[in-house]
Image 1: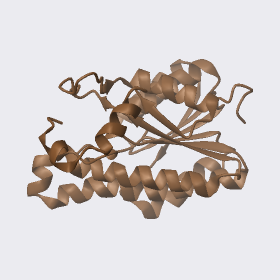
Image 2: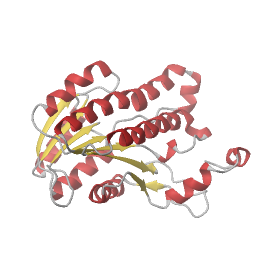
Image 3: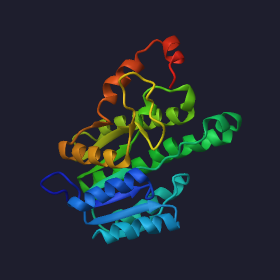
Image 4: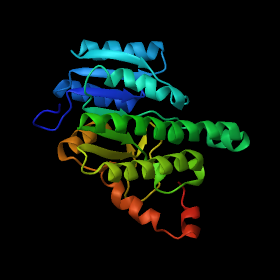
Length: 251
């Protein structure tokens, strides 16, 4: 169960090697979290992530999970929930893709869509059903500012995140009143170039800043979190910008 501050004592990370997810796990372990499940493809990176969190004092388990294999999600995640209640599921997997290559080779674009959207829909619904069955818990979905309005520079990735964002919002509405809390997190560019050409905006962020925002959002039981917070106003303007003007912006 969550503690009196609304922070989880048990955490399941879908995408166990994600930099944002691991920064969030480190922050939560430093607070109250004692049990962590890292779900991802078996790899040395997943093993290193587990070892790091164990070094911080958490009980850490790994479970084989493949976003591109929805048929396995029920079994893989069922193993976790069979071991006891999970206070927080952090859906953190996703791939950026390569826009230029994916336009030339549509199979790459399909892989981005299947990972970021189809895989997330499957894992999100499986997790939501398990959380609802136990009667409590939070599902935090890492979306992206890229999903607010598709940019020429990365519309394949952006469209997949737009779908994920809409799905997560709808899932939150469906679960309202059940004891399950859904929170959508919309970070700016993490580890990518800052869009400093946009006047007055700071679009870049770090995994640690996202982790801080996730913790605060959990305490507040927020439904939507922007990182940095200034992106909310910026994206409101860009979302309503005339298309001809939007095309001219260097985004």
